[in-house]
Amino acid sequence: MHYEIRYKPAFSSLVLTLRPGERILAEAGAMASRSAALNQTTQLFGGLIPALLKHWFGGESLFVNQFVNPSQSPQDLVLTQSTLGDMQVLHLEGNAICLQPGAYIAHTSGVSVDLDWAGFSSWFSGEGLFKLKLSGKGLVFFGAYGGISTVAIRDEFVVDTGHLVAYEPSISMKIGLAGGLLGSMKSGEGFINRLSGRGTIYLQSRSVDGLARFLKPKLR
Image (tube, rainbow, N blue to C red):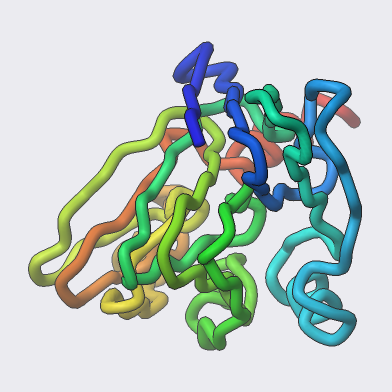
């Protein structure tokens, strides 16, 4: 499968070319265009109960679309995301990645998607009680609001809530205040994520919650 991420970093679109027999699963509503020869079917995201859990607790759609190339020639597919920002691709080789709610775009065959307990720290920081965990062998595509930066964690790292997009399962998360109670209120930072362990995290340069707070008083 050939892929290219175009219009980076603000208006990224994922352009895929599926060879004969290849297939990919994508978030419902992510398709911008496709070759007419591709077969498209809609299915629950992992079955009824897993789909409901992913929707209620993982921030994802109930459904995914499967695109299959039944023809004898390459066919094109273009995927987008609802927010303005960058996209990233990960090559899984038996390892795993955890995605925050709303980050998932698509994955290839060979990758399994599970819903794992994220903990009350994640919920308290506004990221939900559960997280999507993708593992196996294949390609995983995810997106962000703004640009994406990669950080290698070797000890402890602090991230403002709303900026964490994806992280390896070896990373643990704890919620905390940016400073003391009064200092956190004055600084406007509030709660932060204290990440620890060894692994890689992916951050987005903008926060959807920050945008909502900015727009709220202007819409009254």
